[in-house]
Image (cartoon, rainbow, N blue to C red; front, top):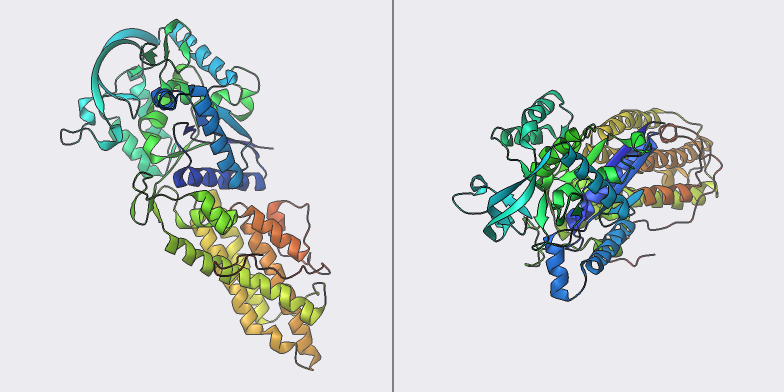
Length: 512
């Protein structure tokens, strides 16, 4: 079985989960579930980044120890994963011994080989971004808002020889088109690398920051947050042990566009190159969500609590909206109106009503089990042709991360099933005394159920609970592979029809 390793970025402990965190978790989960269904041996990592100045300061304001604040944050992010039905195999915390030991081992190795040196630094520092800045980072002579308060400082620190690998990195990006997805993000990185990069400051003196991993070669300093946080991707899968070879190199680091430059596209590949480890196969870079057309901000109240939508609707409804509405790599907007329209149209009306039709009419007209299909005329052939057109294209689109297009095609097929139902009108055929009409009625209901079974199979990476629930209601059980389950079959013939349910209740309806 092929190994497939995928990660999210690790979330910073100095804040609560929001829609952006939810989207990244769901997107990564959809990829992970899809690869498992395709037969890969998937290892899915997420976690939190717990060190740094902001955590230390926030804990001090509350009068608690930094680890207490981190414990709270870890609980919140684990709960987010649980509420969103995220299938992660691991959740790493950068305060864990397994992580800290790897960070110190790498630092010592680089220091011993002369890749790290000590020097005095004088320049600008952003506490919000926890990074040193250069004047070129200014825009129109001012520091961008993302940096918060910027101060000028002078202090001795340790530096990693980042700059000596710049030419190598440029060549790698140019010759490996799959390294950054979508490709236009790679152009942004290459544009950034047109200017000389500085060596990377990898330490903070303990007199300014105590909450971090001490440098193994100088205990008076702690590790700079990025040189600590990025290492999670290899510490979690056993760097330095035989197990490491099983999953590394990672197939995809799923990250937001805000941390592509410079951490993941410059610092991380160069760090790995320096320690002799193969660099990631690819960075999957997603965009940002706005709320009602404006920037998401908790302070202004322009903020979405993912858990509220899960409670009001369902986890699969939120997962569907997030994946259907955003093209991977682009930005998108979230609003109550957009969500409600998508929920009512696609889930309640198209999918929900189709299931209701199948569960209501089949026992009414054919008994409590699904009948065999004995008629194959033009309407049946058209529906089967629609499936043949849909199945392969959706799988192909999922492989290319075009999940929104794959879902669009899937729901187009679901609408085809509803059109077929209108065309055949089994509620009319059932009233006929003609045996042929009775036969067509039975076939139409059986085919509607079978087509529904295949359609929800395609939804499984995005809406796993819905797929399982519909399978149960159709009485469908199978040990076959996912791709085999997507094929046409008579597996439902003789299966007991489940009781009618409202799968996606509209907000004004009472949920069952």
